[in-house]
Picture: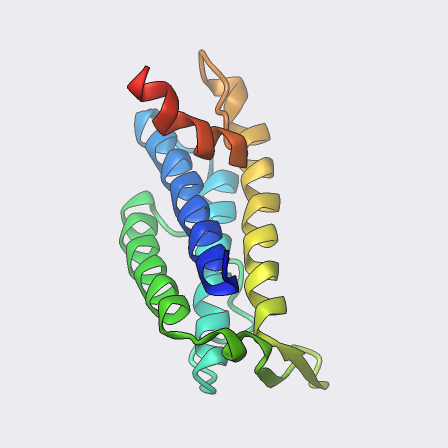
Length: 160
């Protein structure tokens, strides 16, 4: 599998897991503010890195922890997911080694490679979705299954 195909698959998983969280949130009478904040942060971080990929400081690094209502989360997740998938599909294999230069929130100039950032975003989202599962599972009759094997197996289980 090429690195591009691998990242496409990882980001398909990321989208699937985010949609599962959003679907659960839609069933609740009241979504805990902490959960809205965690989901907003996942999306905001992706928007933040998309701006860095483009070389533009479009997202204020001090605004990485918004708390958006569910409707805004749903609108933004569709947009950022579409942009990320399009970006990944546009890359050639060698592009993933491309250096990305930026300043940290503390003002330090750093250099990293594109593939490191893309991996970071996947693990960052998974980390916060784990926190979301801890927040939301006590409110549900049946706990969410959000790991990658669920993503792989769900279509196979639906066919049987």
